[in-house]
Image 1: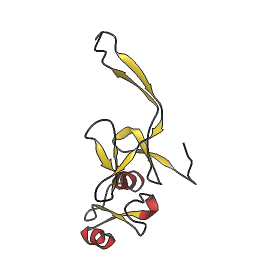
Image 2 (image 1 turned 45 degrees about the horizontal axis):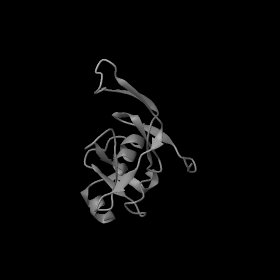
Image 3 (image 1 turned 90 degrees about the vertical axis):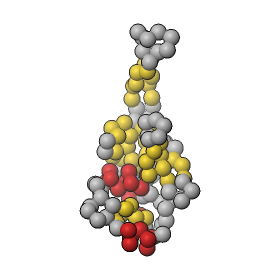
Image 4 (image 1 turned 180 degrees about the vertical axis):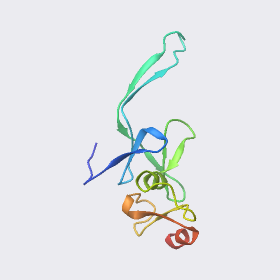
Length: 123
């Protein structure tokens, strides 16, 4: 795994098996899971999953998303970074606004909570 200068990882709220970095990278943590064995329901299958950086995809609007813990559980990376490092959005500022580096840069220093007018200005 490539290291970034002073990269800091924190566990994502409501996602204890995943972390996000101040650079906007997302990783799943090393863990063991049990799955149903279709051949013998009395003996579940145990799988050991390694820690890894999760692949991100770009939406048609240019925002980065990640899939956490199964189908349909996708999240905007910029909102994960802000919720994890800054906290929940303050009243009246529910939008994650990108700074001068644009939508593809989800690093903490390029993001802030803002209102609709802030979002329109950054577009």
